[in-house]
Image 1 (cartoon, rainbow, N blue to C red):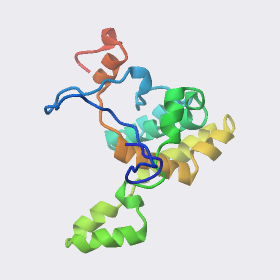
Image 2: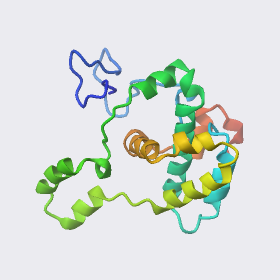
Image 3: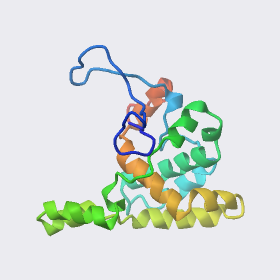
Image 4: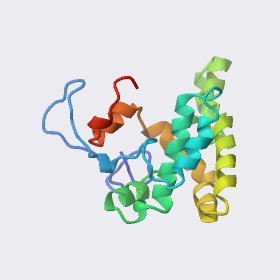
Length: 199
């Protein structure tokens, strides 16, 4: 629910949702969206995605697949949001304008909020895992990526890869995304002839 930067929607803060006229069973389709209303790590929205993929390819043995996907998705979201179609496309403009300012992702919560949660978690290990945000690979890749495109597009680095933009987008990625396979992405984008059974 996108509720005008409020945690809970009230009469004065409307949200976006789907209304249904019947009870839904588990796994029953309630709503469908088209491929052009999605953002994926497989997309090439950011014009420098080849550079990003070349960088992450060097770290296949020391990074996790989800880390590479998050980096690619971060670039796609931020390019779309600050430079691309997100400025003109009514759907994406509305999406970005109505994202909440608060952080759902626990490691980004304020210290007072973390202290409240800490009172209910007796295990030190659990508290540390809940509040830990240690993405060293992402920092390395952003630094390498920034060095390679600094001359080509310094505004992209200043606007889309500053600390606040990265933190805000990582909050979106950690709380508002779901996993999709490359095969699923190709089917969604009507590229069924490109689906490779072996891959």
